[in-house]
Amino acid sequence: MAAVDLTTHPGHLARRLQQAHYLLWNTMVSEEITSPQFAVLNTLVAEPGLDQRTVGERVGLDRSTIAEVISRLGRRGLLDKVRDPQDGRRSLLRLTDDGLRTHKKLTVRTARMNQVFLAPLSAEEQTLFFDLIRRVADAAEGLRNPAEPLVAQG
Amino acid sequence: MAAVDLTTHPGHLARRLQQAHYLLWNTMVSEEITSPQFAVLNTLVAEPGLDQRTVGERVGLDRSTIAEVISRLGRRGLLDKVRDPQDGRRSLLRLTDDGLRTHKKLTVRTARMNQVFLAPLSAEEQTLFFDLIRRVADAAEGLRNPAEPLVAQG
DNA sequence: TCGAATTCGTTGGTGTACTGACGATAGCCG
DNA sequence: CGGCTATCGTCAGTACACCAACGAATTCGA
Image (cartoon, rainbow over the protein chains, first blue to last red):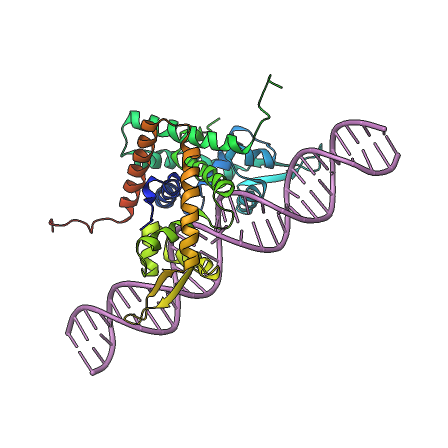
């Protein structure tokens, strides 16, 4: 009766999109390294020695979640974690050789997977796809962190 | 060096989109009922007495996950679960009065939230947004369930 | 009709993902 | 220098989300 059409609900679509991606990742990229784990590796390739919290910020994970992801990657020997001698609160992260190799290997596979994933869209549509999602996600994130970036208004 | 730009990775974007939605849902819709739980309620409003597995299929959740969601909704008294007398394997689901009331209340709030969430996009862009995501998700799901729907080819 | 295959729900294991609280450390200020 | 505050990482709790394996019930086939 009063039921709603979920296919017009962005949250529902976002969940389904992520699930679809998860499945494809599992079959085409890796069954051991997950997409968030790859994001962490990738961040540390770009910026070695980064602080744990900052890595979380880069990939979009809160402190609790990033701690678990880091812990798993450390257990597999893909990264090293050292206490910052300058600031005892921080943990500094750095990929091991194995971590670098793994990142390189997965980068290739990830690119292939992205092609398959986006194959139903034309080139222009793909650009649009990125643009629209990014705008919605950024705006919603902005609602969470109010004020602050008002440079010269107060 | 060989680091990749994650903003061009659909999986990364999908995750960020869902996180953004999660936060907005929590503040604008409900802190107790989650989006997947609402999807289940909504399905049972449209089709009362549905089988547990079928509900999972409707909302896009596997048997394990739907079992937990159903269990939580049952614990809160929002639905009833009865063994099918015709087929002892099945659990038939039906909303309670409280479940119906909750669904009605959340439907209003969800509509409001969707407006806020999609506000950064124009009307045409919103249509495109739905269309692009749905096409990608559907295609990826199709890769998972091969063959089968070939009606007259064998 | 009786055994084999299928289906449904459950359980156990892993991996995100969030909040809230807590201890340790560091920075600031009186 | 000694307390206030802020920050970082951890831990506990809750909630998806998947796979694999299992028991119970049904259905199908010889």
